[in-house]
Image 1 (cartoon, one colour):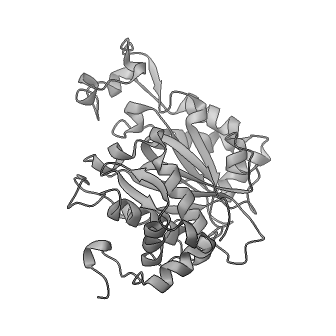
Image 2: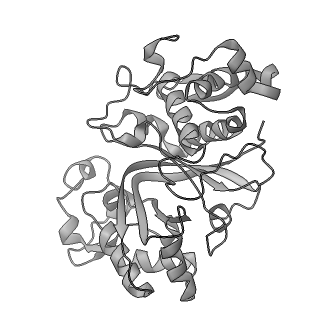
Image 3: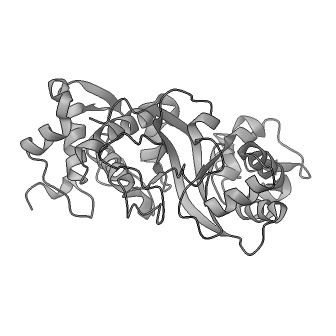
Length: 335
């Protein structure tokens, strides 16, 4: 192998030769040694050059590089809590969400149609893998260093998905989330495993929202305890069932927050309750709710992030559980 095996994950990589790294840097060659971010827990210095080396290793094209840089900056934001994501025994790892689009890019980098979560048709998997390698090689996110995950999950190799604006009935995600600058952005989220929710054969939004609500109100998730962001990667079919009935994405989030609940009596002493609440109780547990109180999966409907992804056929919504907040960065250029 033309590079040390400890640099890479279990998949093959492309040797980051000086020529390839310089090509990845492109117009940023004179910034090669500038620090983009200090990444906990090791507080490794992520420079333009060593980020470029990991992007090469992941198989990225130079046109992907600005997106990789934005993803690194997003997870480096203090509110992302990268040190906790990497060192937890849980399987948390960043999901990379490519928001919006830029049709002027000569190198297509957005996997906006079928097979959206696997990256079969775009750069979302390459970009997500590059970020994972940056975290492994610079931040100390490997089992030999600070990654203490008990089981892990396949998404720790690469978990990237792009928005399908062509088939979405609503505004781009970043506009709905209150970010108006730029045509394309990167969001990152400390994601857990996903759950594919199937509901098809009708066009009733009330039935659909009840299916999704019943599916995500699970006591054993981190969301049920921390009640922070919850991502729904919704197929165009599901989105249009709501839109055709006059529902906005905000309407969907509000209805879901209202219906995706459990009585506190069914949460208490289950999942993380009875363990982490003894020393890290979130604010909503003080004072402790009554047993009859209905506890939503989120503490505010704005926590529910709805993005339209995937192909035009099939009634599916993928729930992405997690424990934290969503961070966002603009993509400055396409190199």
